[in-house]
Length: 384
Ligand code: GLA
Image 1 (cartoon, helix red, strand yellow):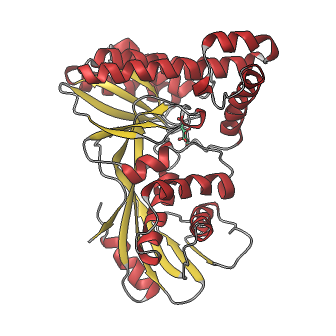
Image 2 (cartoon, helix red, strand yellow):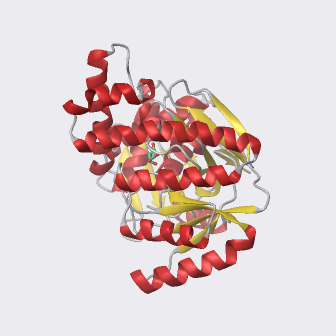
């Protein structure tokens, strides 16, 4: 990412130069809405993210310049403030500061400017990129890197929970901090054990199609989580020790079905189905069997659409076109309610698919989907 403009704007605003940091957004091959259910996910960092320039200012004030926020690009708060800022974007940074302080880091005030090339509200975790870049930078500047990477990811997640109203799992922040070029990460969200998984599907391309339906995760996301928790509660009454849907089986779920609403039942069932699919995809990836990977991606999509109900007409349309064209796999990616589909496409089919998807989508919805080729990149870092 070219940081020239960032450097110039920082210097113009604050009169000196600071240190540059960077954190990426992410993709996820499979394992959707499994992280907060103690399951597995399969994300990777992308080469798009957020860059921030920061310098300590010797006060208790945090002065922020958001290059991409036309309406209110400048916000200032004190580290001693009890109330979060009014601007939503600034709450992410306020939250990160507060969460770092809770972990014993003695932060001082700082000046910061930031900008990004990860699309906002596209399901590629722009908010995790923002949290991670500030958590990483604050750790480097005020704690000599003493907070470990797991904790940095948890700082981002806690920021979402406590300052932004989204009860998310750990996947996005984890991928942003731990990303590794050319590798997906198989993460067990219960134990936080993880393994890098080289990903270079010869003869295939990974491409995202942005439906341009802007998603913002909030109540509807939290409601999905609550459905899962209600199902777990029921099962735990009969089988003590059950903590998340990870611990549950189909017979257990069937046993409590009469006590659950149909909505809660279907959501919990989706999670159990997804658990099986993730395992199948792990096996298939080890063998380089991308056709099976793709088949499971479609199953995930229709599960997310019909049972978990986090899709929308635009996303279903894009996945249906992929299916019609014979694309290997396609599904909504991330939290849902808009954003992107992730597509695993044979190279020989790529051009035909993209032009058909673009044309048909524009005809139906009056707007062209945006196309992003996926490059799997590194996680948070200090830039030179
Ligand atoms: C969002 C959340 C993640 C995860 C996904 C769905 O991206 O931030 O924690 O739950 O949705 O898989």
